[in-house]
Length: 90
Image 1 (cartoon, helix red, strand yellow):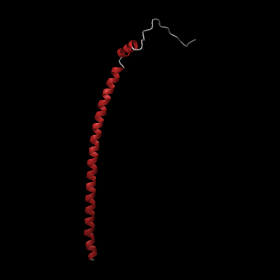
Image 2 (cartoon, rainbow, N blue to C red):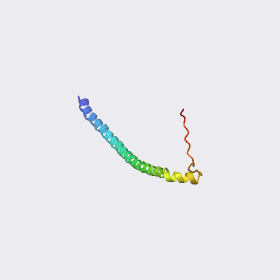
Image 3 (cartoon, one colour):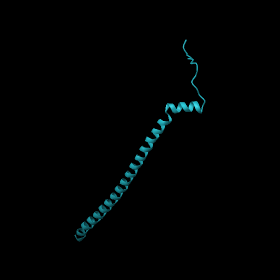
Image 4 (cartoon, helix red, strand yellow):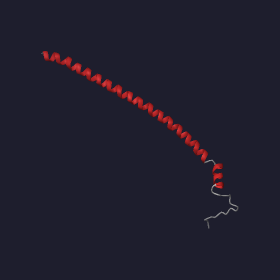
């Protein structure tokens, strides 16, 4: 009977110890995940800013006046004098 009396408190001590270890591990994982979330938020903000800058750059590079100027100055292109429409009809 004495072994049964001592077994219950020992089992409770082990359960408390295991529970405490689980709490410590869970808190550690939580802190790591919070740090990762913050890092990902910062990366998201950086990528959003870069995306906005790239859209602005694309709009600037694709502007009709710029394309026309490059076509004329660097490629020597000009407006055609006569327009000929070639059709594939009967």
